Length: 130
Image (tube, rainbow, N blue to C red):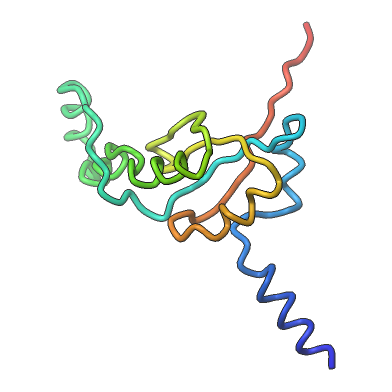
């Protein structure tokens, strides 16, 4: 009797791309500030890299790995998020992620997007008073 209930609850909530216990850290007034990490860099363009940076990288054995970090965040994903009404606050090609503000109700939409790998809070750092 309890097995179907456990299965339904696991199916509905097991596929979350975010930890609901961490959402408190993302709270900013009535909104949440979060990082959306993408699954890939679909059709991304290369970010301009200076010759000096290229020379530095050629000295490192794994220079070819840095090409992934040189690719911008996918414009296709960013544009889709904008069409959904989200404002992009920050982009990180190193994290392959964007930061946005959203409402609690938006987590269901964001969780359903296939190109979002995970959702993490943008941590709030409090300055120490001197």
